[in-house]
Image 1 (tube, rainbow, N blue to C red):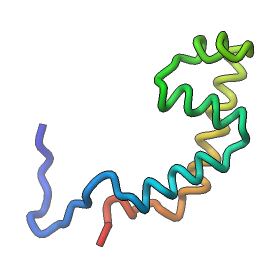
Image 2: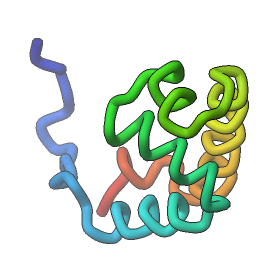
Image 3: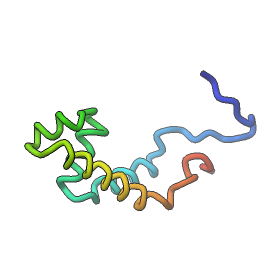
Length: 88
């Protein structure tokens, strides 16, 4: 599918190194266990049950930690909102 856009609009190249560095820093700032669970899920593509079994914790704990990680990342990266779409 193609997306319509203004021909004068500049579209940033991805991945933007500065943006990726900020995202990686925000992930790195998470508490160790939360970071590990988050990366297992979002980067390695593991399901909650698989993570729970690998770490010997409950799937509910995985779910809670993913939720907390996403909340922390949203807060840490809130200043970047719009940067992706309004990159100059």
